[in-house]
Image (cartoon, helix red, strand yellow):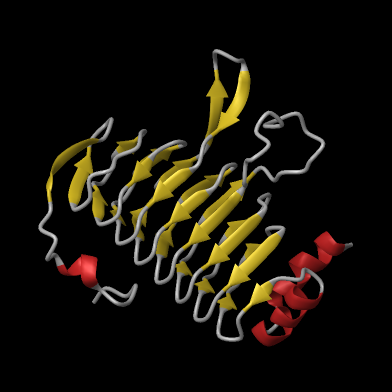
Amino acid sequence: MKKIFSVLIIFLPWGLRRYFLLKIWNYDIHPSAKIGLAYVYPRHLIMEEGSKIEHFNIAIHLDSIIMGRNSSINRSNWITGFPTLTKSQHFNHQSDRKSSLVLGKEASITKKHHLDCTNQISIGNYTTIAGYHSQLLTHSVNIYENRQDSLPITIGDYCFVGTNCTILGGAALPNNSVLGAKSLLNKKFIEEFSLYAGVPTLKIKEIDSSAKYFHRKTRFII
């Protein structure tokens, strides 16, 4: 019954819909936050001041989504995972796994991306997942152990991820970095103020720390 109701309330005016999300789902949604025409039902949802989820997003089968102040998930993204505390044998060897998406303040996910939050995906303050069709995939098959396995993805503050990138579990992009379009990020990097790109990703060059993108105060780019 609750599943049917979760579909029906999508079409209600936002004020009334927010009321049900607070009372029935026990979500924490700031009065200035908003969800558009989207099917967004993690176990736990925290939306801070000014955060928003636009139309046609689907976000299901994960423990939590936490959105910092003025962060945004724009249109037509697919966000899914594999929640903890289930009866499934999948991932039960990872007792500390968190199936969650965490966005820092003023962070932005643009359009038509796929985020696999089987393990945690963390996107830092003022970071942009730009363009279209990037895949952030935290789980895969461990062929040595013959089982599904997962690792978190960490993207730092003031990062720019170009269009159509693939980021795998265990990868990390440091603060103040750019990941070039169509790159495959499959490991951790630590050097800030750098351009990373390629398949697989390598450090290409340094970026001057005075670049204005690294000093902006809002997610909006004119």
